[in-house]
Image (cartoon, rainbow, N blue to C red; front, side, top):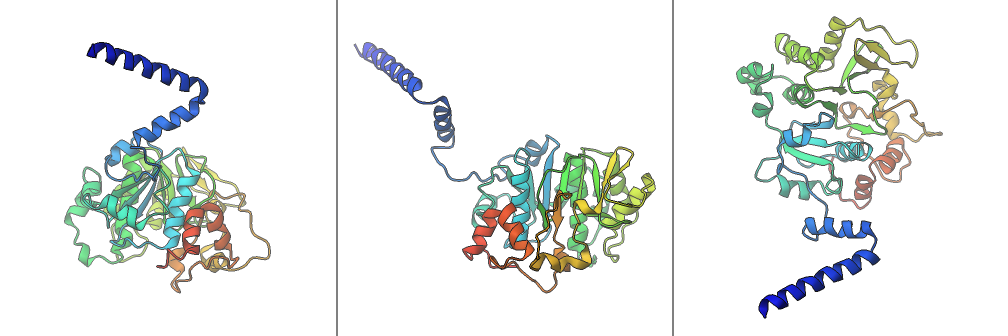
Length: 340
């Protein structure tokens, strides 16, 4: 008797499901199933270290950001840079490595400190562990012997090393945390010229294990000198590029091919030159369209006056935040982001 009741109940359930399947659009059913998978919760998914970096980044097309200090209260510009990348590169993982994270507090800290980023499901947060990252790379021997307390510009030097290793190990694009993405970069292997003679290390991209990043790491160790600002950064990429390729001077707005590497014209990422960085915090009579640019470097290292964005001020940065990182902009309006 009990068995008959169970069978009858099961058949009734199938009939009911079949009825609803016929009257409810298929996409709604799939959406319901997705919510069920997420424990019926519509809250943002926080991507932390549940997956290892390799599991997330093995596709070779990631966008990398690095925070090499312990700070977790990040400026609005940093949050805007990461958010804008996640919005532009919707189908690619955006990996944010932070030294202030640990395996035990990652999810808690991410939820607390980055509410504007957690709605973007393609952003992944990972602890930045120098020893693990540099292990089994050309930088391992250097890091194992270095006394970090005696290094000038250690924050910059360690970041310079991390970005090289991440791109070499996984493949993808590195961006500084003061770079606002506005459209997709159409090349995989590229350098971004900062001027007619210098290559930036604020934005660059290469496929996994590329010879250029390999040579850069070897030069990093051989010519290491922390007392020279940029020696392990833009100066390194510039001298390796000149050694491997005959990099000509830019004459117009064209990009240059050096072997299989594209060297992007300065206009692609630096349409506002370093010496004119204040223009981002000024009102323009006519807003620039930046039609020739893929991303914009806002030169935060030059901003020693700590000029910050005032929402509604109509300065150029105000328009950029509003368009490319609206969640961050709304948080500024609500005065939820007050640190610089």
